[in-house]
Length: 592
Image (cartoon, rainbow, N blue to C red):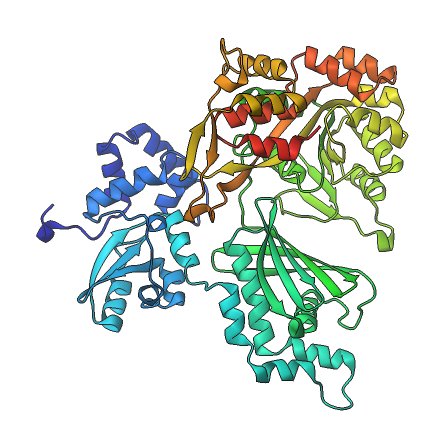
């Protein structure tokens, strides 16, 4: 398109015409979407609505806009951006107007924008820099990558904040000032506030699930848990330890001068683009107080079962069991294995105006619009069992219990399942079959377990291979022999054959696996993101009889396998063969 004919504006009508011309959307689909929008309040743009409805991908949308507006697409994640060039656009402008400056010549400045039609922003930057603007189109992932570049490494940030004079100010307090007053004053120091804000903000950009602030003898170590693995982020001077802990306690309304007892609390961070709830735990250790902060993204949308890593066959099993009019579905696994996320996903799927969903949790991690969520408070006697008894008087259809920990809660749960309610809960067991004898050990009668538990789902989280540096390989004979010592290879090949993967393959060494070689996009770890591996045990008539006979978990598992259950590690190897995760990850989480 000649530059004189370039079109800088693309409204809804123009976009729809372009989508139809490219045969990406039909008149019938667009008409139905228009009808759907008319009946609800939609707070997002038409483009975002199309993406949210998954009627087209972001790449398809970008391609259509790029051609229509004659603006090239750029992927910032594959570029090295100089800090000097990046800073030509102030960070507040970059965030608010979704624009990144990524390249500069003597006369020109290249801008990557999600909205190339934002003439006002381009004119502002042109006047500020005195450079001619060249516009490029970017997607959401590319924008997030560019924005993350504004954050210097934390080590550099800290060095700027703490000068010898600020160190001295933190070490001393005026005469006659109480310890609590002194700590409060330290917590309000600008350098301390900036350090804690930077720690939190950087953790959010890194998509960390937890922040560990750990005092050592001569320093304070900060670590982030990213994709389930802890990473050292920085080392802070020992002098700032008390001030950082005090700042976190101020944010959380904890007792600042209490250093001998563990404390728990929570606070929220809400900025444009994200909203996080942060759970804080402090404990006294030898070198001071350790702080762990759990980050929960309240703005995150509920994932689908597919996005959580469930195979088609597993989804069919889950759907069959959650649509039953009553009974219990248990999710098992260690802490941090994604049990709550799975339950929240299932609840979101069932959440309609026709049902009453009530939960009792410790704590309430994510808000479900339309559900009645109660948090336990043992200090005033509000336990799982007491809360569950109260919920049963609230005419619920579906009940979610955060965790079954004791006989009283377990008995209330199975009685609820017997009296016409659908009940979801979690247990801490290593596999699905162990959940059933575990309920017996807690003290629930075998006939109650056999008649109320519909299915047990066990899971772990494994890291996903980085798609930008993924490479195929085959294992050698030595590796296969080592795997055979841990896993039943013949069973694995049979399991793969049932999922249409192994075919006539007689050896695991014939299967192509994958691994990440490490690149800038995954911080050279070879992984980006996590996904679940699962096993689902349906309580059949035979399994129910085995529960009544107090059979062991091993016997129950063997029967479930005969009935077609795939074990977690088998599901893991299937995902490894599909290029989703690695054999190393399966070994890490599935050691037997």
